[in-house]
Image 1: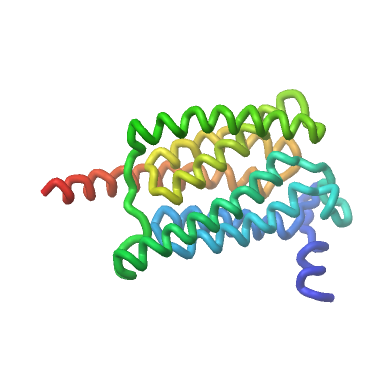
Image 2: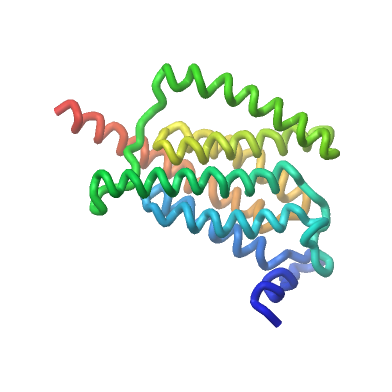
Amino acid sequence: MSVIKWLFESTLHFGSKSIALREIIGGILGLSSAVLGMKRKVIAWPVGILGDALLFTVFLGAVFAYADQPSANFYGQASRNLLLIIVSVYGWITWARHRRVNGTDQPAVSPRWTTAKEKQVLVPAIIVFFFLSMQIFKALGESGTWLLVDTWIFTGTALATYGMSRGYVEFWLVWIAVDLVGVPFAFKNGYYPTGTLYAIYLPFVVWGFISWLRISKQEKLAAVN
């Protein structure tokens, strides 16, 4: 049996529940990426990309399902992971370039708050992105409360990942909002490792916000002096 075949067919059983092994591995890689990102390590991006690639196959359950794994398609969640991969490539390139310019002994990004000018561009873009995404998911068959939930998770993830690549301190707050919605969504639909990841992720996100906030203040003070 090939490694890929084994990975896609393997499940773990907890009582009456069956969980895809790749969902567990993807969740662990996602959490590892968050911790590495908090420490401003470039390797956070490729680790996250690998985890998102695995989770993409999980949320397109009707396409990649094996045995008695969940078989519903959640387009918002699957699209979220695909978008994460795309934006993470941008983040990887951006952080790597920053390291080359400033020296390999320096952090890959300098945390800061968004400027008023940046907010004037980001806020309208987010609103348009949200409603456009909602219409796409609706056309794909999603409806009701989960349409709104799925759309927000997708939009918030896009914003947070882009914010991380740019070093925006606010991106941690967006992740908190995504987690608060993502936990009940995942558990409600049987994605227990992902729901657990969201729950474990929350204190790390709070820690990351406090850490980046402190760093941004220190670097701003150092620049003034």
